Length: 104
Length: 117
Image 1: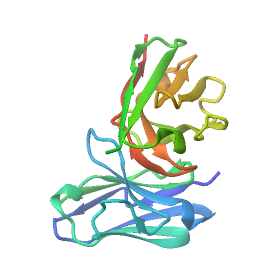
Image 2 (image 1 turned 180 degrees about the horizontal axis):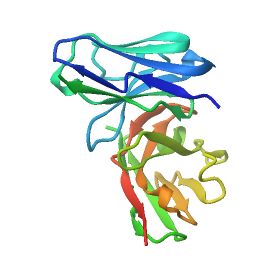
Image 3 (image 1 turned 180 degrees about the vertical axis):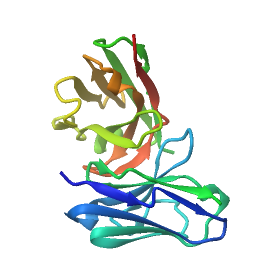
C-alpha cells in the first residue's frame, strides 16, 4: 500500500510570497494519477492539478505542479488571499495528510 | 454547470443504517465514474467507494467493505451509498465526486453522518 507524506504540515506565508508544497510517495508512482486538491474551511475540495502537472479547468496559472517517481511538488507562485487553505495530494485512491497554508 | 448535491446524512445509532444520495446535474451522469469520499471532523480525506459509468463495477475501501454498498440510477442521475452496521468511526462528512477511475473532478458540498448513541 502506497503512503503519501505531505510536508510541511503547516506553511506560514504572507500574500505575494511563493508557496512550495511537497508530496512524497512511499514507492514510485505513476505521474498520470497524481492530483492536487484545495480545500477551504467548510467547503468541499476542489481539483487543482491532475496528471502531476496539468491544471484543471478554471485554475489560475499561479498554480503549478511538477515531479515524478516518488517526489511531487505543488507551487503557488504568488499567494493571493483566497489561496490560504489546506492542500491534499492524491495518488490513485490514496490521499496525503494535507498541508495547511496559513497567513503569516 | 456541474452540480452534485448530497442528502441523507444525519444522526444514527451504532449498528444502524443510512442511505446517502447524490443528485447530479449539468453533465452526462451516465458517462462518468462516481466516487464517495469521507472526511472525519478535523481530519483528512479518505476514499470510500467508486462505481463505473454503467454500474457494473464497484470498489470499496477495506474499512467499509461488506458494510457499505454503492449504486447508481442513471435514469434519475443519482448516486447512492447504502451504509449498514455503522460504527462511531464512520462519523464524517461524506462527499460524492464525479470523474474517472481515479480522478475526482467535481465534488458535492457533502453531507454529515454522525454515528452515536
